[in-house]
Amino acid sequence: MDRGKNKLIVSLAPVPAGAPIDKDALAEDVTQSVLEGAAVCHLHSRLADGSLSPNTSYMEACFDAIRDKSPVIVQTSTGGVSDMSIEERCNPLLYAYAESASLNGGSTNLGDLLYINTLNDIRYCADMSYQKNVLPEIEVFDIGMIQNIMKIVKQKEADFHKPLMFNLVFGHRGGMEPTIDSLVAMKSFVPEDAMWGVTHYGRDNWTFLAAAIAMGAQLVRIGFEDSPYLDEDRTADFNYQVVKGLRKLTDAMGVDLASPQEAREILGIKKKAQ
Image 1 (cartoon, rainbow, N blue to C red):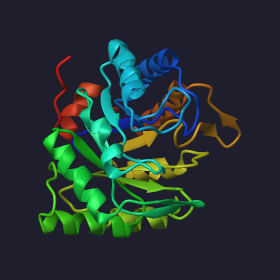
Image 2 (image 1 turned 135 degrees about the vertical axis):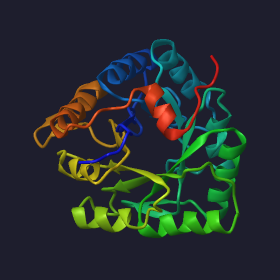
Image 3 (image 1 turned 120 degrees about the horizontal axis):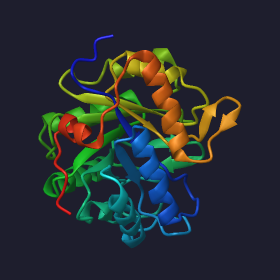
């Protein structure tokens, strides 16, 4: 398997939707996860009770606690199903240490919920990410979203950092199923000069992620936001156990994991001054 000179980037989304957050326990879990191979930490703007909020103070406190212990890449989220405006959803981009952020490629059903991301929302988030020197990780739930983004780029309707980074999301009801056929189809629409990775929501085994890694994915996102499973019969108590499970897979495949600094070099971002 020829992956070129780039190592695999492990992105950790450690907080399940709606769960209360203890920032100190979270910081310890993320720190251990980085020791196991994670390079990116993805957090939504939530209050301590786990609810999404335009007030970023607790998210910032969580990241500050994490940054005191770990050199992990800070990735803020601009997503999540809520009644917040796109301006409120982009408040995390104002965090001084934000290095990357999610940028959602369109609207979709997430089970019984409608996840709204209009073209104007995409343009606003892209432009603000560019202005704040934050690398957008473009979350796409179907092929049409990749086409959405490329039309915006080609028509110069918003500014994007290059190369583009797509995170192909599978497993949500209403989105792409985590099958090899779906992966091959979706990957075929990623531009050749773009980077790509995958998220497998609801994962209870490693088969799909193994296929994506074998196909050359440059990033894999795991963590309790997407799934706590170690295998079909066991769930983890801590996120670092999930990262350790992924590392067991990549070791068997002969794939090296990128450190946070190596991931910054791969993604073309610079750590913001302390």
